[in-house]
Amino acid sequence: MKIAVYPGTFDPITYGHIDVIKKSLNIFDKLIVATTDNSDKDYFFSIEERIEIIHNSLFKDLKFSKKKIKVIAFNNLTIELCKKYKASVIVRGLRAVSDFEYEFQLAGMNKKLNSKVETIFLMSDVENQIISSKFVKEIANLGGNIDRFVTKYASRMLKSKF
Image (cartoon, rainbow, N blue to C red):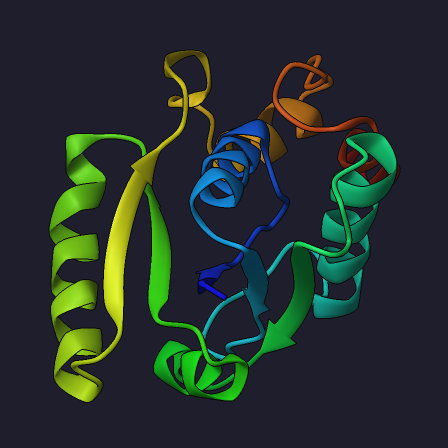
């Protein structure tokens, strides 16, 4: 069984993230969607809210199979998650060239930590490449329509915060 870990903040999950998840499911038997609870960052949603949003977005709004996806929180190294879940691949999403430098360095560090784990980069479809959680939050805060960028559940949660 080929297992991959898709780590991120998902604050909140967007259709860009979901494109990467869909593409990963075509490649891997199981995908661990892991949202971080790194105390060095300020999050808009709590870890519990992000887990709830991811879970409801994937399994209720979009009807993904729970057999192929596991949603978890983590606060350790991604490489440790790979070890725990027997994953041989880390999936990372790329939106623009500006993402590449950081992602390239991160992939190199992960490879140094565990040479048996590969990192693959997947791009979301063109219409979703511009979407970022940061912009979605700004649009929601200013009363704009975010329905094209996030699922119904994520949209409701964002609107409830403003």
